[in-house]
Image 1 (cartoon, helix red, strand yellow):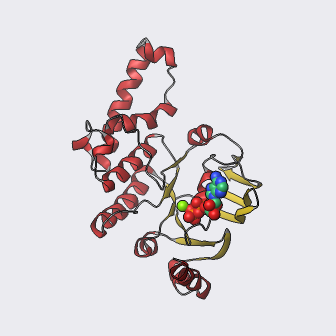
Image 2: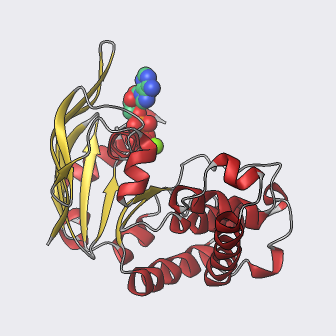
Length: 256
Ligand SMILES: Nc1ncnc2c1ncn2[C@@H]1O[C@H](COP(=O)(O)OP(=O)(O)O)[C@@H](O)[C@H]1O
Ligand SMILES: [Mg+2]
């Protein structure tokens, strides 16, 4: 079953074409990689899928509904969650409260219900606390649940973002450079975590990552962007041996 389709997506910022004629199909349960040099347009693709940007052209479908043009909160409710390249946590809040934020899109209580602590809200609050704690256990953060989120080391903050994304109850998870800043051990643990979460939560994953070892190990299929254009797609093996991909990455070394 095809979960997500992007057809002929183009995103322009003024005169800059950040993403040009981008096409993608993701089958339910797949782990797909989106790679390419810095500035290639990868995060812009995520921003279009997640409803942060409305594509200049093209259509995005999720489970047979057109979602392009919907606001981000509607897309979250529809079942797409994301993490950010630059971690975005609520620094004033504790670890568990950051995960509970993810649940808010799923509860029925109104703001007044919450303020007045009506019975429905109290039931839902318990559901949120229990659910958030379970997710923190999943990602190995239960012991720091009451700490301030920004007091955590970098690798743990990334796992916290993952827990918060899961709290929204997604079917499709978009991970923007989940291994960035992690050491090889943390990266390997993350890889195992993502594989386990995919099974336990019946997830489909689209991820952006620069760590090639990680990408090649975890992805079943990879798409390569360069200057907004798709230059290759295929299995990890095909991508690793593709001359255009090698050239794009060599180009990056020369540009740097
Ligand atoms: N909101 C924006 N306004 C203007 N330009 C943007 C915006 N977002 C991204 N861009 C530009 O689009 C291009 C692709 O950026 P991005 O998608 O972040 O690349 P990547 O994630 O592959 O590194 C870059 O040239 C970037 O400067
Ligand atoms: Mg990016």
